[in-house]
Amino acid sequence: MNVLLIGGGGREHALAWKLAQSKRLGKLFIAPGNPGTAGCGRNVPIAADQTEKLIRFAKENRVGLVMVGPEGPLAMGVVDAFEQEGIKAFGPSKEAAQLEADKAFARQMMRSCSMSMAEGRIFDRYEDAKAYIASRDEPVVVKAAGLAKGKGVIVCDEPSDGILAAERIMVEKAFGSAGDKIIVEDKLIGEEVSILAFVDGRTIYVMESSQDHKPIGDGDTGPNTGGMGAYSPAPVVTDALMSQIEREILVPIVDGMNRNGTPYKGVLYAGLMITAGGPRVLEFNVRFGDPETQPILMRMKSDLLEVCEAVCDGRLDKVTLQWDRRPAVCVVMASGGYPGNYEKGKVITGVDAAEALDDVAVFHAGTAVQDDELVTSGGRVLGVTALGATISDAKVKAYEAVEKIKFDGAYCRTDIADKANKIRK
Ligand code: AMP
Ligand code: GLY
Image 1 (cartoon, helix red, strand yellow):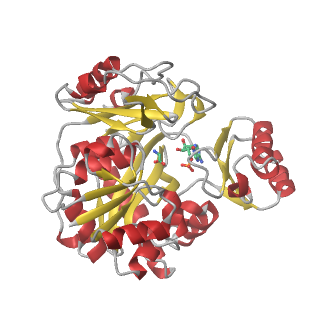
Image 2 (tube, rainbow, N blue to C red):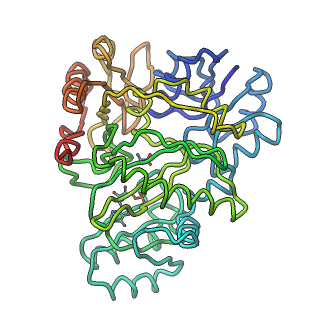
């Protein structure tokens, strides 16, 4: 079967790498892809939001399945558009994608399912938000309701910072129209985990747990980023906790989406805070996580294409997934200055030497080829991922690989996966 994968980040390189291992794969096309995905299939120069062109390409190239990586095209209804043309597409409908694209919708859905989440309020007027925040003495989290590339959430320890955050989002429009509405939530304390599940509308198949590292600095300091590294599994998610998460979060939300007339199909990503009072939902995403997908897929032994077809055909109940028991750690190498301003076009060396190490894969995110040289072209540049006998072994190996890769201004956190050992009893 020919597959068209939409997107061009680190997550898509990991998806392309895994799809390329499938016995069921005919040709793999990636639109637009990146220099990493070019090693797994054929990159097609069509942007992820050019739905008409993507459909024409899929028809001309007898594509049997479309996989969608990022949230943007999903929120625009790319899955609906392909399905109207009779082409199978893996991912939620435009309506179901609101679970990520509109945090106000997500909160209302969660409320209707009586789900555990942070206390919070939705505002569409700055003055009201300001008055509410001023009335609180506890730290708050201020979130743009719309899509903001993972950066629309500001965690504030002082109420005065909360008011400034609301002003930045609603008045200064730091995230454009994504900030027309905001959510003001109580700040939750605990360990954050990412639980990703395949969902075919009815059946839920939970993948191995993982943990992201959102802030730019070691020890979770500094502003939030798209994700500076991840590992899988997350020891904080015991079997009992995973059962609780399925029972109290995943099953109710999938049922709720059905009741709402917006059935869910694709990957459902629950971003959770494990608080002293149990798991609380921070957000739902309607796609694979980036960078969680990199370590998760390195551990997946089963055929990803087979699972995705089962999701599209509504027969996920017939599928069993096999996982490598060994943990995996992904360290993101970023451009100096990210998540603020950074320079592009820095020559990258050492990727081959890093990949020559056993059980190491280097997933490209913000890279490009210029004059036959690999150069940086984004904030998050590479996701250096390794398997190891233990999480500590995987970490050592991932950083050994990182050491081999050089580019001007390269930055990475040095403490990815340390939390796993802190948590392990
Ligand atoms: P979200 O996109 O809603 O997951 O928010 C991005 C990040 O902000 C999360 O991964 C958390 O690190 C943090 N965050 C969001 N909501 C809260 C909350 N209520 N309490 C504490 N941290 C939060
Ligand atoms: N790793 C966070 C995200 O994919 O949204």
